[in-house]
Length: 107
Ligand code: HEC
Image 1 (spheres, helix red, strand yellow):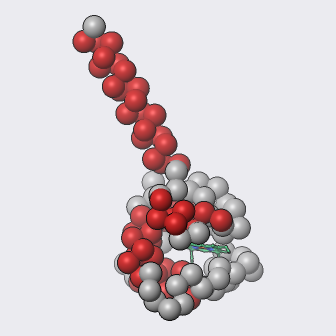
Image 2 (cartoon, helix red, strand yellow):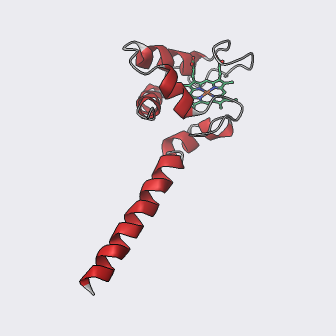
Image 3 (tube, protein in one colour):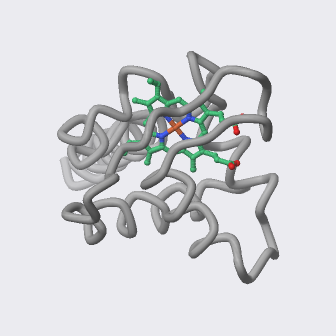
């Protein structure tokens, strides 16, 4: 019986882990990022995993990407541009958290 419970717990943890790996955080949904981005697939913008890989080991990436998402821009991943998502600077906390999250995705 104890064995079965242990197996069930393990199975639940695996499912939860997978869901977390591929699911966008609520903050991304709230800020509209999900309209153009997915964790592991290109949509309108690049997959966030690819972003993380590109900037892996780049100490200035966090500040650079916060500015990019806030003011928008194009040319890094193609000609499609990202609109300014925080031109007034009111959501900097959210944007910072999202960038920190994105940069953890590199495997
Ligand atoms: C309307 C579509 C759209 C929305 C909404 C959007 N993005 Fe983007 N995003 C893009 C496109 C297109 C690019 C590629 C820009 C380029 O090639 O320079 C991009 C690029 C990025 C990059 C990489 C930038 C670089 O210079 O390498 C990050 C990080 C990013 N987005 C995060 C976010 C976050 C966080 C949000 C939500 C707050 C968001 N995006 C919302 C379309 C969008």
